Image 1: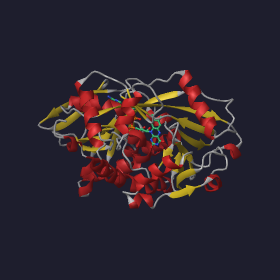
Image 2: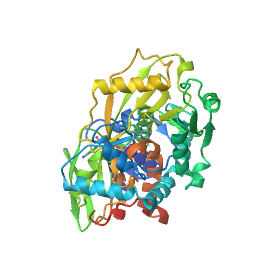
Image 3: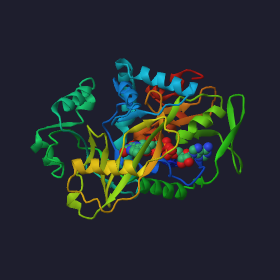
Image 4: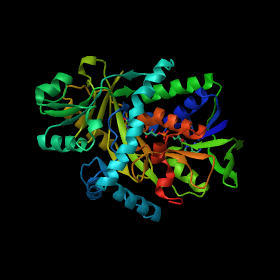
Length: 416
Ligand SMILES: Cc1cc2nc3c(=O)[nH]c(=O)nc-3n(C[C@H](O)[C@H](O)[C@H](O)COP(=O)(O)OP(=O)(O)OC[C@H]3O[C@@H](n4cnc5c(N)ncnc54)[C@H](O)[C@@H]3O)c2cc1C
């Protein structure tokens, strides 16, 4: 089949790699350079554990309070649009405990494929920076630790994938560089660090080698359609015809879905990161670390570490002030007091594509027979890129198991 993929972030590139491997003819159309959105500066954590969607019980209350200031994992930028209001209401609905369970179970279908997906890349000879350090949620208070671990009690299969570390010696045995007051953690030993630029570069090399076409600087501006079938994606350089179309355009997916008559419940979730360079490996974090009080993620990479922030729902453009980066560095020093911070890059900001229920959106655009969405991966687009590619392939080839319906845009209703 001839397949056009719109968007060359990590999700679009992973889909292209998978579909080329299955013998399809693939063209990727990208408005700028490949891999420059959130796929570039993310926290580089690949997790086979964290299937919890962002809208969790209590999270909207936390986010709403953040509008009035505060230090929070999730915050909300006010915007005055009906679509945005509807999106926030859906998000609030998703935080209901029963809906959170449904979302977690859905997301776990993808999570269960994650580690095999990256192992497969290595078996296929893709050459990218990865480390097998695991990930750790760390806590200084027993109460906060117990509350976080209690979330796993409803998901025994997920709980089997973590190890509980209670007491400073248990925590520091895994990572001796953590601050002494970090006394509790849960540890996911199988999680990975994957440097996102290196994996995208490897995917592009493999796509080109397999005969795939990557057209950059060519935004898709509309579609030619008839009778619920997309005939061509119209780019700034003209139309491209195909049998199947995949919209993997990150936060740009909402505008493209609108061109096909579908109001996609997806808004940006802003975030930022900063790279700290140092050579002494003995000072690096042993794992990717997520903190409880400051809500940051810290990941060891070849050249030092990358630290990143929480989620700013509805942020219109990626932006981060130098003072915010200074604060992030100070938060890194709180948990890693010995990390040298004299070689720090300027900060970077990106917009994650965030679906209203926090679960990725993978499936046919309602009303269309050959146009798929592959977006809404929020905090976990790097993690879920290979799994999403497998789901897309099964959908396009017509042998998708029933449970993949959990990702269909139709779950929001035909017109959303
Ligand atoms: C601070 C931060 C930390 C993160 N940490 C992690 C992490 O540790 N682990 C993890 O798994 N995930 C993480 N994420 C999330 C992850 O980065 C995203 O979910 C992922 O990058 C989304 O990839 P994507 O390919 O869907 O979208 P994008 O990377 O946005 O790619 C979409 C592409 O589509 C192109 N495009 C848009 N419109 C058009 C158009 N009309 N025509 C043609 N092309 C178009 C864009 O230019 C872009 O290149 C983090 C994100 C942030 C911001």
